[in-house]
Length: 305
Ligand SMILES: Nc1ncnc2c1ncn2[C@@H]1O[C@H](COP(=O)(O)OP(=O)(O)O)[C@@H](O)[C@H]1O
Ligand SMILES: [Mg+2]
Image (cartoon, rainbow, N blue to C red):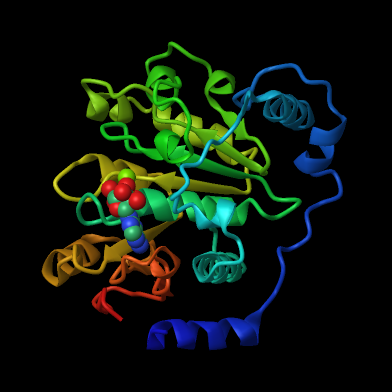
């Protein structure tokens, strides 16, 4: 076990706590009682907030249910192997984020890394599944990688589900592209079909509106983003989030580019670096060294702990 992880466990043991209780009239309560109809309304500037909340809750309850169909060797441990050490590490990461939230605004979390293939999507999905274990809080997982979306496939869902791209183009409403994953309290917003002009779509201003609207209905919004290099997409997500989790992967991430990216990042956004390690081909040990690390600007933990 890494030193970082041991230290983290100690810290968490000292500070363990549960999700703060929700107000009595929470969306979760409304979800159980509302008729299944309506759309995920964008809050109207001069509308009645109660009415908006009800409309949103109705839409969430009415969201189309998708049935994950995981591959036999799926690494979504928070769904198919909750007793594994990997799942345990996501519980620690989740707890750490909840503790952080007591001290700062934290709902929209972007998961990113320097380059492709470092495990962003896998970590974003497992983290979202973990957050969705709460019986009262609602979690949304967004596939924010419009160019190379992989989350639908990871869950064994159709890769052609309409999603963010179609909504940003105005072809679909938000209510049509937010799905609920069967067997969990996790909602999913897929990327949609890769567009020719992802940057243009993201720059349109509609993305900010969408996230604003969604933030009113969800307690956690986990965004699986493209890598920071060499694309310009990720800064858009960063502008729209409350915190960034950087992923570094053993054998893939190089120290210099990681340091460069961390130096460029607004330090107030950096929540930490998740070290994704896979030094063994043994399935059980794939996650043994997922290490959520408290990071700060200038302090770059080794991806190999
Ligand atoms: N810890 C790990 N152990 C084994 N395979 C992993 C691990 N993390 C990621 N992978 C695999 O590496 C590939 C890239 O992961 P992915 O999450 O799609 O990366 P990214 O989103 O950063 O491009 C996927 O096939 C994934 O299953
Ligand atoms: Mg990815």
